[in-house]
Image (cartoon, rainbow, N blue to C red):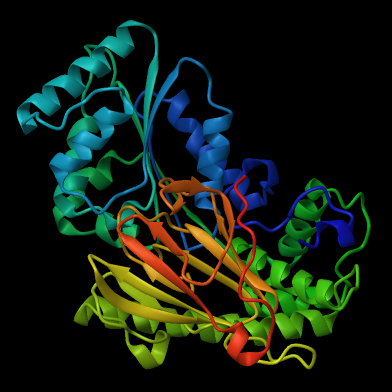
Length: 432
């Protein structure tokens, strides 16, 4: 990759939530303090909301890394579950095998466990990420769990993190009792322009920049215009811009590199992007489907959404399809995505280039880096990983005909370089 050219020890803008790279803006520091307060107070119940990519999961991972040894944690990330499935998931986190238990037994086991931990001088913390996906009945079950107490105090601390929709659910008449249990609520906003620049410089410093100027000063307003200060979008645009500079054999990023990255990603400015996402969300909430013209290309199958394919319109690399991904599940083809030069991110949430809405797929599961010479697929620290030839891999140079399994879906790689004369169609496999 480009780390050698930029003299960096590691990639500075990975999408995975790495606490090492956490930049604490004023708002992020406050959100982190609210999360930590769940340990201080016996009735700790905190709700943290924020737009997709605002940094909620990174804060959670940082909190977990710093957690004291006397705190027992259950972390739930898969939230499209029933109340019984949720209780089972919590007990699994605590070391039980509850899959044959009925609801009464699940509750009794959990209550006993909580009281035992309290008696042993340990605190118990439940963290639920993507909580906006929880059904109302499951949220009500969480309220009941929050009421488990000894004669002196409650024994379960709770953090709910999610997108802004979570606030709307909590404010619904059906959940008024749950809303009353919440001690603190905080909405995590995007970075300001000044914080975004500091965020970029911080990540570069952690990656080994040593104070060297890698991004020219004039690029920062342009970066902010197209990312709106959302850390995940900042990471995507910065990495793509660095790849553009790398392709030009230049060890610093100019405005032309950012413009090339924007063109490659086919992004509009953030204000228009946000308006389109909200319109799409309204459409999905009323029809159950995304509007293809507003958000991308909708393919058959309820679990798949393919966003606008990334492409490159620069002078040195022709904008031609270099490969294709055929997406299949249960023996049926449900979609197809064309790969151009650039990065394609695959995951469960709508901000991915290829969305696979399946509980076995992580929020950002993997990425595919496409160049004229080949394609590489990389795991983004997903829960269930990527599998090639029955082996879980972290990094794999894709060969024509390779089948990459993600949860219950298969990504079939078809290399088209030979017919375009763009480069070799085969490469060696690496496993890290």
